[in-house]
Image (cartoon, rainbow, N blue to C red; front, side):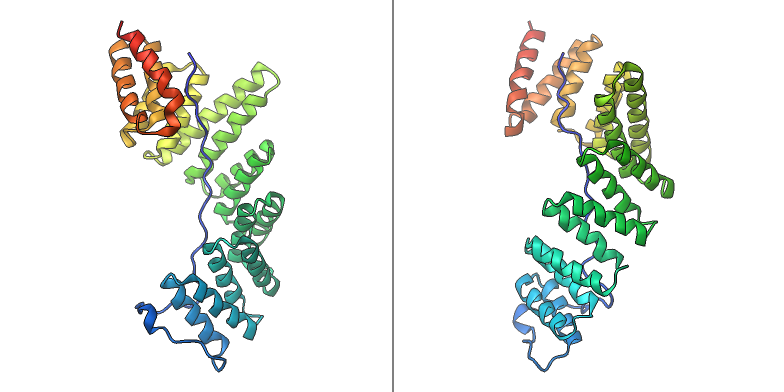
Length: 310
């Protein structure tokens, strides 16, 4: 029976913190109370004003303040960095990229600007530029494991699966407790299994996939997507009992997880557990009826449910 495998999840790590250097004012003021910039202000005052506007979610005004800051002092890397973050909030990705590049021109080893520049390149779908920038982050900060994980994800997106595996392993060597690295390592091995030229190579890749997911959920037991992908890996290896347990774990964490319900119903039926299969199909139908994305699978579920109830 065809299982609903869905899409394996790739997690992109978030931007680094908004402000750098000195924090913004401790107590926010209302927008009406903001001081208006004047040409007499020096660049640091414009920087602080930009922080105030940012904290008040007045992103257009924050951009204006930071722009004035770097106009007055083009060598102020923090001004360029915060300007890049504001442009990100405004979804002006080309301007964001240019701002981070200005910060890096001032300080070529500015780790946070390099990291966010790589993410901005991804947002602009400039994947090769993003990859090269993640490589620069690695050179500047070899222990920046988040950047290594993102580099691995990007390599996987570009089809560089062996390189992605090596990158995840490098991150894991630096921080074995990083469940995201183990999770994405499992995905890379899954894709290598799909491309394997013979059964022996495929089996090795599937075993490696399973082991990576097992490590991910051991480190993060509430990682429902880890349990889900682990269940799929057990299915590929014919380990139905373990598959059922993994889906059940995912559903303990997220009871209305439609893909896990769908696949678990099939697994119960495969083990001859008809009452559990019926109950799970019924739960799936209730959940999926509210989700447009499950429309195709809902038809299958109702057919299966009707057959089992005959």
